[in-house]
Image (cartoon, rainbow, N blue to C red):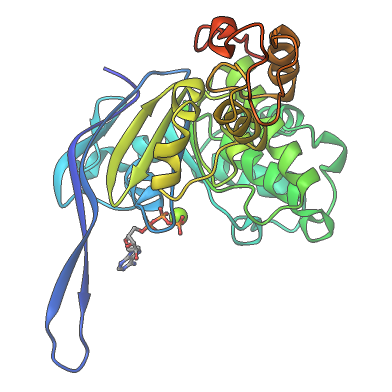
Length: 316
Ligand SMILES: Nc1ncnc2c1ncn2[C@@H]1O[C@H](COP(=O)(O)OP(=O)(O)OP(=O)(O)O)[C@@H](O)[C@H]1O
Ligand SMILES: [Mg+2]
């Protein structure tokens, strides 16, 4: 059993009309099954309101199931006595770094979590050092968080979670409020934590380019998980993603459009590097027009069609 497992998970938000007192339930999570292996980098995609944040809050027992169940390292989130162990196992990082930083100095802020957990002082300092170093913020340890950029603040927030030694970190659109540089910094940090410290990462994002390095992608729609697979498997299904009102990475879209025009490219190209390599291997028949896709007089484009999914993955 994986580090996060959900079975037939259901969650209804109950809203009450102040005038009539009538309560209505709206289903935000609708029969979700999930099994996430320890050490994986998972991405969750989905249109606004599809239930991503509601699902994330279940991973940290901030919300409890209306039906079915969710287990974090075999601990049932409905078991009150496990709540602190669950929150220590699965740390959460939210969208707005300003709401997550409480200390007036960076190192204080990072030490706050372990201090609250009753970790001995020496060990707290060790964890603060290690966590700041893991997110590349050691040189800012004595700075005031207010003066940091959005990306730096978010890295401090991640260090604060890391200092609690979670086995799993759930990030709900951690880059949504950041500029492109901040986004890059945070994503690099998260990938490094996953690769070098083996922390399970569950990343909720609207940015398709943040998804391409995930081990596995889940796509949500209307409270359900409607697609599940590797980034390549997911992004090979451009039409389906469009139906779900989702984008694909720009380069995937370009390759897809070219393929529609008859250029024999594999499905699910994820990086510019792959795209260039795949283009280099395209053998257009003499006289063929790569834009209109009209075959040349010597042959049919289909003969040069590469097998789907052949392109190699850029692991940088
Ligand atoms: N506190 C709440 N009370 C009532 N309904 C809610 C509440 N929070 C969310 N919802 C509803 O539950 C559904 C799922 O919302 P959720 O925030 O989980 O979606 P999301 O995928 O995270 O969306 P976004 O991409 O906008 O962050 C939506 O229909 C939303 O309107
Ligand atoms: Mg959300």
